[in-house]
Length: 302
Image 1 (tube, rainbow, N blue to C red):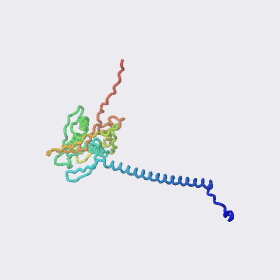
Image 2: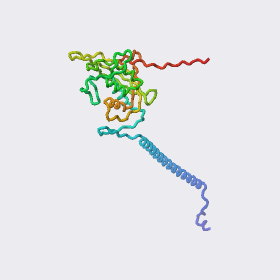
Image 3: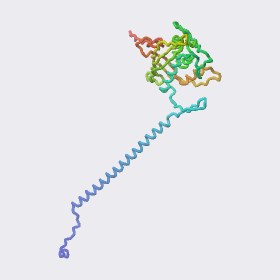
Image 4: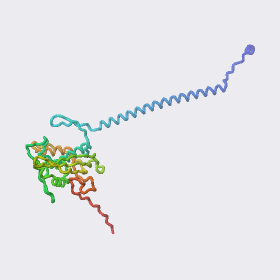
């Protein structure tokens, strides 16, 4: 009665269905937005943790490599000074060591000085290099090589190749080299990089191109130099166990020089002509051709 008299309608306690559905939809959207934000937060954290883990893994791998690397070795020389060396496998040699060995040995083999050379230099008191006599091969005119060449061959040439090489070296050594009237100079014009033989880690080939100069003294003090003689060979080398056994207290100069050369642990096993189209390679060494193994023919079974 009073409500009708005052013109007011009674309040409907039931909510409009449309409003109810809108509220429900807004609640669902809010939940979805919260879930999306949560997932994005988790993904960002997982990505950050993955990046940190990858960086830690890379750092651990680098630390492991450094830890497993053989340490540098301090080598003390006789005068008290020291130097650091890197450890390498026993059968391997660095390209620089192979090239230096090849250059030094070939120079010692093919250079003939007027006087005997020692580790301290040229020694005038010892007189001329009278050489060392080797067994004479059939057809050879000369059978002497210089002391320096003999030392280098004993220390640096493999036994299976040494006799053949020394025989040829004696034949091409001028006889007047032993009385001081003839000198022989050897100059390397090209020294190739070491190439492994058939993928082996302890054998290499080095291509060497050089020139040999013979200087002859004449009466009146004048000198004559014949035509330069080319050298074009492929040098085969292999690694051997270095010799570190100490020399006896009383040792000869030759023993000391041989021991000094063998410390590098390399040997020359053979030499072959670089130019195979020219007989004997077209150079002064002209080593006899080494016999090649003949292939066996398969036999037919009856």
